[in-house]
Every structure is written in structure tokens, then in C-alpha cells.
Length: 385
Image (tube, rainbow, N blue to C red; front, top):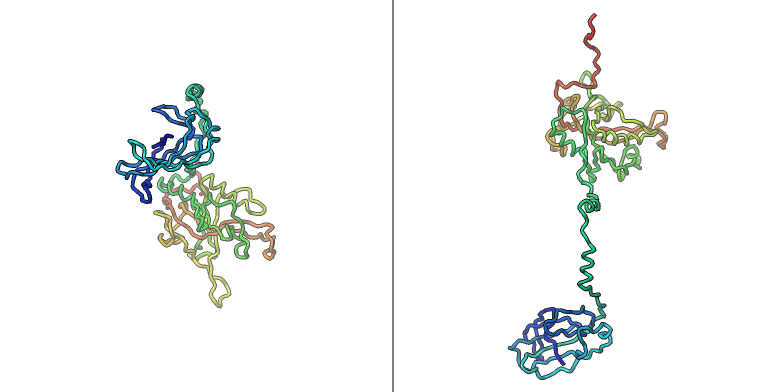
């Protein structure tokens, strides 16, 4: 009965058994079908369909004589064309180890290990492959383009178009494209375009008047051109309630502002031409009966960069002028109407608006810039009498 020296797969274990002593020698592991005998240099092979992994060790010439060899039985009638059924019915019994090496060759160690059934894979003949290849023809270019999937949507947001601010340098306009997309979730700070629709009025007694996310008031950035300033009276004394009015200069921002104003009850049907943000600035000392107005001080120079307030120069409201480009940081609040009664706990009807927190100056307008909101009373005589 022939023994198998090596197989089609070459793996090299590290030792062969010689008595009770391990001898370093190259080994070869072969994965062979038990129903196939490969003769000569035949190019025909049958896919593995049997149950046997044959591990054989070819001893080196320096190995001591008398090395043991274990052979697996292979029936003589098994040929290259035997079926998987024959393999399944073939009983594999390891032979008794032989003590004498073969004549003229090195001792061989072989062992048969049983594996689970492996189903044979169907063979595809060359003629069938040729027919399949002929049937699969490349599509013409026009059809190939038509069958291509649509391109993935671009992750770059569409630039916002700002109107009526031609006097603002392009460098500042480029900064606006970033500011208008601000979304700082950790700080609850959002630009007007990024205010989450999930925002809702607070539930607690201190937040029920303020738009919140997770019970925390959100800060909203408005970008606009200054239209009005109300911080000091004619004598230079601060107002008790200050405000600033700006105009929005993009359709996207006006649409976003409409969503916020639509939270009023009854709903507002339009966005005012001038959006106001105000707050009460006052303090009351112990023993005083009335509040004393205090100047609003949260104005910052962001002409170079808009960053942490502590890193920007602080300004006064008197440093602001009409047509300046600013960012207003505000909260969005609601208040009950006079006919509703403040004592009522329900919010049946109420107005909404922005409450001013800080002002960031982005660009100072030229002093000679014409204000398109000014009303021209005097007109030159156009007709000769």
C-alpha cells in the first residue's frame, strides 16, 4: 500500500517523532481527497469532497534510521473519477505502525484524521464558461451612465446670499458664512438658521418664559445691519430698558425668524422689517424704593475675530452706529398680553421676542454711507415754472 509523502498544500511543522525523542525536521501537511490518486503530472483535479486530512512528515537524510511510519489505506480501485458517495462509504482504518523504513527512501510519517462532511462544489466546464462570457457583454457608454447610481449629496452647505450689504468687505462676508451656521450643542448656542425644532418652552417657574432645550435656555445669534439704538437719553443717562433694532439680509434667516415668531399665540403671520432685541438694565440698592438704570456693557469688538468674550476688546454702546454689521446674542422669550392677566398660570395668548444678552461688532459702516431707511422730506424742484 503506497504512502503519501506530500500533498498540494505545503505546511511545515517543526518536529518528527523518533521513538520518545523529538527530532527537528521539516514536515509537510497535505489536504487530499481519499478517493483520488494523482498520477504523474496530470492537470485534472477533483474538488475535495472527502473526510480525510493527511499529515505527512518527510524526514531529512540526517534523521536516525528506524523512524516509525504510519500509513493510511487507499483502495487500489479508487481512481480520479470516483464519487463522493464512494468516499462516504469507505471505511478508514489506520494501519499498524511499521518499524522498517522503505528501501532507498527516507522514512515517512503519515496519519489520517477524520473531518466532517464537505459537500462537493460543482465543476464548470470551459465550454460553459465561454458561453457565459459571450452572454455578458459590456453596456454602451450611454446605457452605463444611465444605470449609474446618483451621486451622494454634497456635505458642503449652500452659501447664504446676503442682500443690501455691498459696503461690507468680502473677507467679512466669508466670516458670515461660518457664523450663520454656528451650532454649539454643548453650550446651547445656535445661529438663527440652526435652532433645533425640538426647542420648546421651559417647564420650571424660572424657564417657562424662555425657549429651551433639555430645560436649559438656548442662545441665538442674529446677524444684521443696525437700524436703531436705544441705550442713552439725550442727556447721556442710560435707559432703564435698552434695545437694538437690526434688519436681516438673507431670505434663509427671515424664514428661520418666521418659525420663531410663529410660536406666538395667536401665531404671527410675518417677520417685522426691523427685529428688536432688548432687556431691562437696572439695579436696586438696599433701602431704595426704585430701580436705578444702569448702562448696558456687554458690547465686544469682533472685527478681527469672534471668540471668547474675555479674548475680545470690550466696547461701549456709544461705539455702535447705524448700518454697522453686528451679531446679537439673545434668548427667545414670551410674555403674557395685558388682557390675559399675569396672575393666570396658563399661557393662552402671549407675544414673543428676543431678549438681548451681548452685541458683537463685526464691521463698522463708513460714516458717509446713506441710510436707505431715512425718509427724504425735501426734494429738488424738477419742473420749471
